[in-house]
Length: 425
Image (cartoon, rainbow, N blue to C red; front, side, top):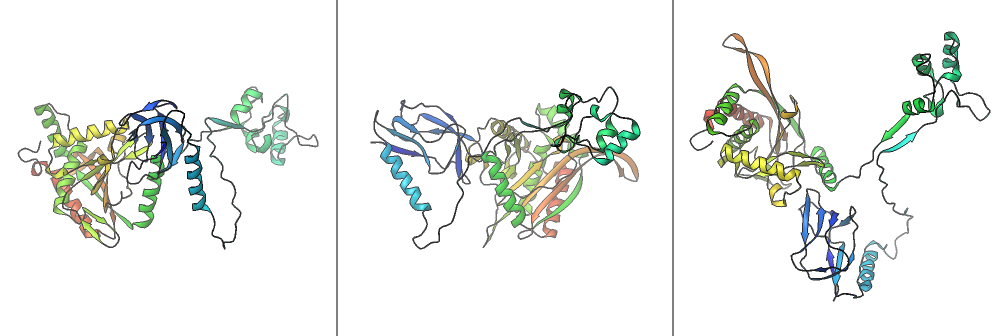
């Protein structure tokens, strides 16, 4: 008997999925556990394995197209079996949901249009050329009065000027830019100068979710920001010695993650979540690490980071970064964060503010480590400085609470031996 295979909910925030690739063709037999399709969710592209057996009779979504969660993904059944009744029944259900109430006043609804996708589309405005100057409907050349006056003063033949204004109209800038022999209007030159080029790219499921969640965060949570400069001389020296002595490649970000995790244990209010009617104070420390991918941003979570060594944090973050770029992260990898770090220091950014990643109460924006002139013991010296900015949800965290957290973080980073006891490397 034919059965409907529905679009699965593959993440907690997923509302629709895009079929990135079908691995089965219509007419092929499918066994339980076989790979049927790759589905792009709001977080990653994931493999969908069948929970049913049968012949693939119908594919409800084309590659590159989306379907809502619980929508028809496919229909399985016996070879040659009629599945049209299933489709009709499904359409009837949808019609019942959207049908107006008997006494409701009918309204006119414009039919939905498929979104148009334009790749490298080009719009070329009409331009004047020496052999074909742009003229109005009455045969007169299109030229502004000021441009005409300037051309007469400079002795410029308007027939040799390419117009860059609306519909090829010659305007003041065309006369100002004109150079005899070099800016002569020709079809190739004028078209190149007055082309409007753009690319329209469909919004990915990931980008839609980023837009929705961060817009809600920015306009719902009352953000405030605390910025602090941290002397990183000790970290620079300690990192070099650790990597040389142990043959490791610990990054500066690994030190930041470890210091943040240990600071959160001392400041549980910063490690909290706003849940509407309650504030949840988390006593476990799960640090989300923002990772940039082509489609946007993912935040895999280093769980119980306060109890992990630098080398463990380093290995875990590297693995997450690789799997994020390969679209191999699973929902369990990005769920359960209690605090988030966004580090743009490797891109040369000195300082920035980040939007809180719900349900966290705070996010730390980390800038780059810069060599700067600093005063030490009354003398001017070269030092390494890093700026961090803590974005706080004022419903949960007050200014003094956030400032205390940053001071603890500063202490750990300026005196790394305090967080690098035995077994912490």
